[in-house]
Amino acid sequence: MNGARRLLIFGGIALAVWGMGYGLWYAVFAEHQALNGIGSSLAAAFDASASRNAGAAEAAFDKYKQAKYVFDRQVDVHGHWIGLAMLLVVVGIAFDRVRFAERYKRMLASALVAGAVLFPLGVLLQTFDQGSIPRAIAILGSALVIVALIGITLGLVGRQTSVDQR
Amino acid sequence: MVFSQSSTGEKINAMHESSFAPLSARRLLVLGGIGLILVGMLVGDIFAVFVLHQNAARVGASLASAAHAALAGNHSLVQASFQDVGAFLENRGTKVDTHVHMIDFGYLALLLAILQPWIAFTEGMKRRLAWLFLAGAILLPVGVFLIHYVGLVYSPLQTIGWASIFADFGGLLVVIATFGLLLGLGKHFRSRVSEPMQDTLLQDRSAAGRALFVGGVVMVLAGFLHGAYYAGVDLYRHEALDVSILTDMAKAAAASDAGMADRSLEAYGQLQGDKAVKIAAHAHIIEFGLLAMLLAFFQPYVSLRETWKSRWAYVLIFGSVLLPVCVLMELHFGLVAGGLADFGGLLVVVALLGMWIGILRYTGQLDAHLGDAR
Image (cartoon, rainbow over the protein chains, first blue to last red):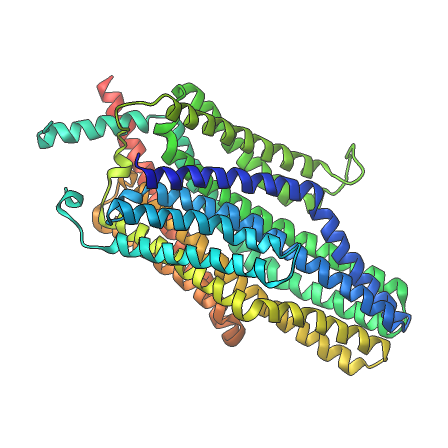
């Protein structure tokens, strides 16, 4: 097994284990609390409106906004890490079909693994800091995945060699 | 070493027979995995037709009831309406989870089937782990589906019912089986086998296999590009709108403005619809892309003529593109686009069934051959 294939398969397995571990932590320690926070803040906002208390309603909506923002990103991170891990392993198994020189294949594999780690990480960091750095990390990660996938597609549809035809 | 055509064919047959023997781990995982995906897709189709829209309407009605209760200053009705929203969302959530987990476990089963030659355990051990995986992969979604109906009946716990307990146990079985198979994989790579692993599945370069793999990668790429566009253009706008519409609704209730409350409710429904179709299109095209890539590996096991293998491959790709594209158009073209999306899903199911039957035919031929040899 060459270096690029090994990187993709082992990177994928490691990322899947990490993603599942994160999902387990999330399901046990965060999900129910987050859902409770969303539901209770929304109910509190409407309850405050029923009491004609605009200030309390606004505060409750702020809580709802924060809770929903964090919840959406935590769910996305779990789904994307595991989905990308599966993609890494599948692409890794078939990486000999990509008809590029080994050096370019290593670059593509590294970009795909780096993107698969960075993109959800950037999204997760947004739950701690809503500034531009986490967003930039997420954009960089997704750009790496997209560029690597374009490269892999080009490598797959390239001219079939006599070795492949045999 | 150069083999004659017949001896190469015999060698390939022998390798297939050994890796795809009756009740072997690979055969269990391939047939079980595709079976799980098929059932998961049918559950998804039934859910989309009979539950999804009706449930969304009930959630909308409960939210409207909450807004009007706030308008009337009725605190208890506000709380009751939100409890209804919670119950409807739980019903919806468990159905979606059943659909998603069945399909994802099917994908994982196919992935583990591909990795079987690299798992350095005895065939008996691999078979036991495959059975354990399949038992958990069935138990979890069935348990999740029953959560809404079983509730806390006869439960020894205060917040978790029996259905949830069995679902969690199913998940544990899947984790144990997957972890066990990964240990076998690690054992193989630690043993530093000098001879490269031969697996005919990975050497296949048939037209159907190539179309599925390249089509799959392109679909995943398209899904990522669409996801990036959604994140850049819609995500933050949707999040801001979600809060502002709800705030308007609450303000309308506080000001006893029934007209504004109704307009806000309508806008909220539109927003949820817009979000749902964009996320569904993104998720489905990537999932179908991965499915096509995984199925590409198993084309040597599909015992059909090459023309039929190619037809099923193209039908699967066409359905996989049609469904998300039509889902995206649902907001503008309504039921016509929805019907076409369901047709796309049906094409994927039919193509998958065609391949599954082809693999079953292959197992029959292989078993008959093994029987003759004995």
